[in-house]
View 1 (cartoon, rainbow, N blue to C red):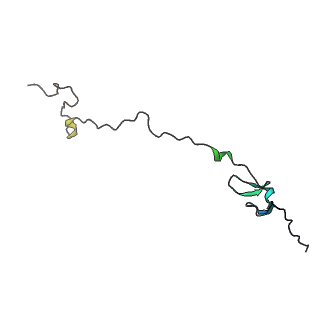
View 2: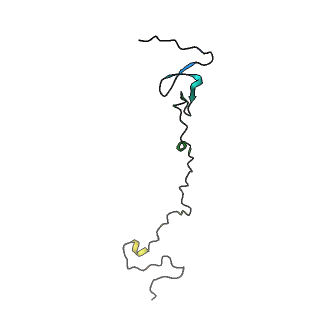
View 3: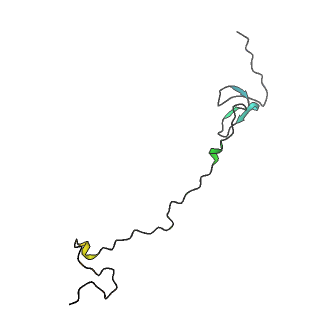
Length: 100
């Protein structure tokens, strides 16, 4: 086995461990990622463009929305008598009633 040397001490440039590979490196050789991780300059990658895309909010409402209308049944048909005449929907004074 070889002789192991102690790392050289440089004031103001401490040793760090890479958050990606786990290898020791100097602070001057480290680079901070957009996620806040420290890594070597070879391991560093820029932030992907897909992470910065701004999504436009959609308007889910219908522009000409109307409330649901109550159906107008003919009086005779509402009771089950399809042949019965009715004056529903006619102007006042008019009817289907036979005159005698």
